[in-house]
Image 1 (cartoon, rainbow, N blue to C red):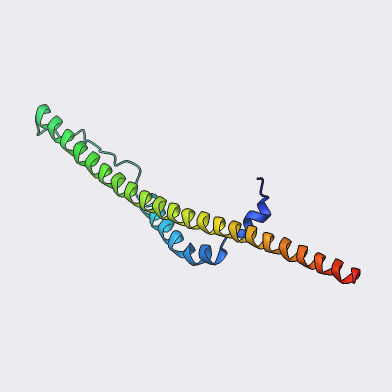
Image 2: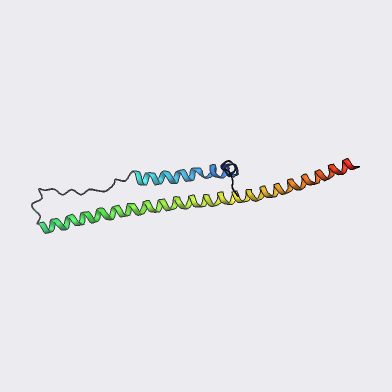
Length: 133
């Protein structure tokens, strides 16, 4: 059964959408702040004038700095993933609510259409009886 976009938009419970919009907007804002304010990748600069350390110690220190930077980046990504998944969960719940409301409106429309047809049939029958008498 093909339903036009206008019909679909008319059946959307806009009060629920508007009521839940601030929560979704806040979740999206938090996600944007979490993603947008983080630097891309911390760059580790090694100074060329560190002659006092041996090359082996220097390499170990550089590796430890890089490991710390990677762990920090991983932690940031994990936090962003959690924020994204929470936002997706909220959107999915709202989508389920909208679908439930649309289905309820579809069933009500079918009942109203059936009742209207019955009333029209009864009215037509009564009109015919009135003209026959």
